[in-house]
Length: 433
Image 1 (tube, rainbow, N blue to C red):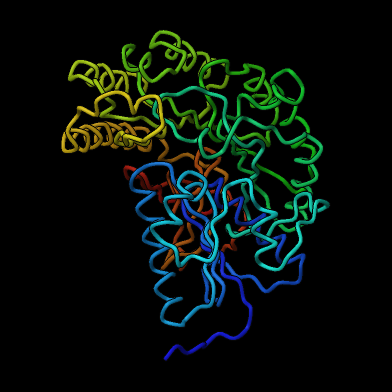
Image 2 (cartoon, rainbow, N blue to C red):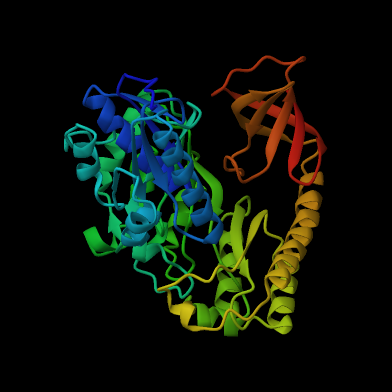
């Protein structure tokens, strides 16, 4: 006998995947709230909306497992309805409808009005920047564009997110003002490709102009750049970074590989020489800059020689921040035609080797910070420590500064000047000065 426990129409939004999905969930929740719907994020509700990721194998697996988990709860009578949206749903909707038919409805990445209708809500066009943020109150993601026009061979994002589409500068400024009014102090600018910003709307790259407008927003103190593409990087952005105190000396620029045969096969539109020159220009223009990159190992045809070239280059470039992924063979991408010929254990071993090199580099760079004082932003309290970040660190992926809560009192969202007295591979310990 099925029993209904949660009679009330409370909508629980469950978010999987990247910061772009976090943003999309927040927009969905803002729309629902404006329609007077009761909405929660990853708490109990009798109606569940799962915002899925479909980027690589691990993410797809997590999304499918989450869908199955909630479908089972529906079958057991614990919840009433399950809706699925996001990238996995966009990419595999017909397959999902066949394999997991107990989901009430599937929606793609551009079908927000349809999803709202299914939830008994209307899409409100006037809600520019109205979101229910799920990040700590001091920072928020600001999605400045959707989709991607790049032809990278390994990437399925254009299949799921479509062509590049910039959001107008005035809309983004309005959104930033609303976030600042709610206590947000740090904006993390995100897009599949920040550097392409403006080309579709204004026929020229306008990221620097956008930054110049955003720094005028009262209450915003840090602006951080995530996911820049190396080819065609607009160098005027570096000038803004150098001259505007609010723009963090930080950039996330996924470079993926450096061996020329791999870059060519990946269709990255660059070479080792050009990429190295670009990083040198970054460091010359903004010597303080922390550069974060991500790499892919085990791409089809990656030889030991290619991998050695990559390792040597990582040692030489000494990136402040670096992450490494193993290649995932994704159907309907250009690289899917290639033979996925690097064994899984080799991929994992190579990723571990890269991260070991990076761990040592990070430790050495962190030792240099001992005795220095940094302005930090407090994200949360965890155990006996306040956890904070410098302008050179993004949430969740970068170094953290730990401050002893028994000696110092801080609040989430506070800025403080902290002197570093101890440093590990990825954590710094400091005291308020």
